[in-house]
Image (cartoon, rainbow, N blue to C red; front, side):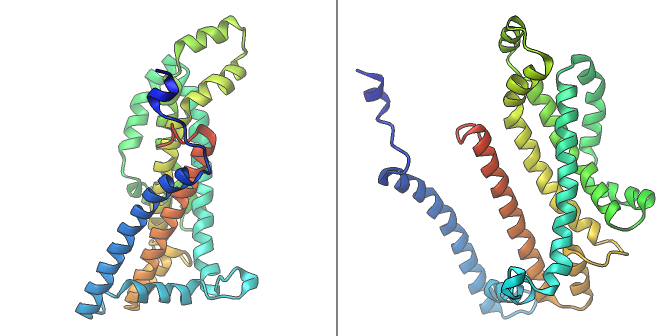
Length: 279
C-alpha cells in the first residue's frame, strides 16, 4: 500500500471539497455568535430595561455615532475622528514599541545562558505585576497626556513578547546550531536563518497577549482624570451623563476592535509560519 493510499489523497486548495471543508467551521463559529445575539435580543426586548438594551439598537446607535460620516472621511463621523482614532493611535504606538523592544531584548536574552539566568527573576517579577497597577506610576513620572498613555501601554505589553521570544530562542534545535557552526555561518546569519524562524511561534504567542494588554491599557489610561479624548473618555463621559446606550456602544466597539486586530495578527502569523504551526 502506497503512502498516498494509506493517508488519503491530498485535497487541492481551491477545489470544491476544500472550500466545503473550510466553510463548515466558519459557518459553525458564526452560527454560535448569531445564536447568542438572537438570545440577547429576545431577552432584552422581553425585559424592556433601559440598562439592558437590545444589540440591534446598540449597533444602530454605534453606527450613527461613529460610522455615519461622509464617504470622503471613510464614513467616519467627527466623534470617531476625535475619539476612536486617537485611541487606536496610542495603542498602535505602544504595541509597536513593545513588539520591537520585546523581540530584540528577548533574542538577546534567550541566546545567552548567563543573561537568561540573570534576567529571568526580573522578567518573571515584572510579568506578574498587574498592568493597570503601573498606570499611576507613569502618571507621577510623565503627568497626564499621550506620552504617559503610550509609555504605560508599551511598558506593560513588552513582557509577554520578551519572555516568549526568549523562551523561543532558547528552544532552537542544538543540532541545527552545530550544523551552522560547521558551515561557518556568522552570528547575524544564525540569528536570521535559525533562531528567529524557530522562535516565531512563541513570538506570535507573546504578540497576541501583548495586543490584548495594549487594548486594555489603552482604555484604562483614558479613564483617568485629565483625559480629553479616546474611547475610555467616551465611556466615562457617557456614564456621567447616564447615556447607557453610548456606554454599551463603546463596549461593543472595543469587542469588535479586539476581534479584528487579533484576526489580522493571526493572518500575519499564518502568512509567515504557515497554518500548521499557527495557534
